Length: 285
Image (tube, rainbow, N blue to C red; front, side, top):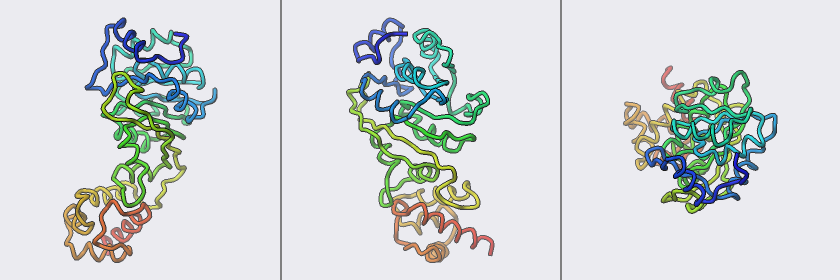
């Protein structure tokens, strides 16, 4: 294993060249090349030898090298076959590391964990699979206790948004966790340099969903319907997506004490839950 804590960009370039590899834009590959950012990630994860960590998209193993020093077990899931092979060689396969060449969206956490149910997710997520990967773990069984991930700045800000700037992504993640931005990361901290800045987001998973509803799948059916036309007023979006008359939707919104002229982005999780309960009651009557 190399002695350096982190590669500056020139060393990232050298390693790629020596390995006969190139960063693949199709897989959203941007390799971290800043030591202070690396330390921020691992410190936010609060790792100990008792921890099992799943890392998504380890790439050159820059973050992986730090994870294996601090965690008891690390499972690194890499889609790129060449990078997965390089990772094993470069890190000399330490006993607490398993490298899995697979698509994270096609393998469940339980398949990766070998019996344990307590784990954390730490990753510099490939941009193109950020949202589906986060939902994959949030809806998994077992769920992680903590996630610390690097994402595009715009995505991170959307995730932690408050009512007024909510999105379907924000509702779906805040229903299962308390997300907060730990640090901003300029584009020049990566090689190749992406066109946008990033942020590190920490998710503290909730033991129970933030909303108490009978059926979370049904709840999200309603939320998706509300966000189907986010620029429209809520009664129009819901009527179109749920196949109901605008007057019926207006009554539902009134029953939930929500102004029918509001837009989906203005609703809190509690208001969505209240509307869901009114909707379910109306369906039964």
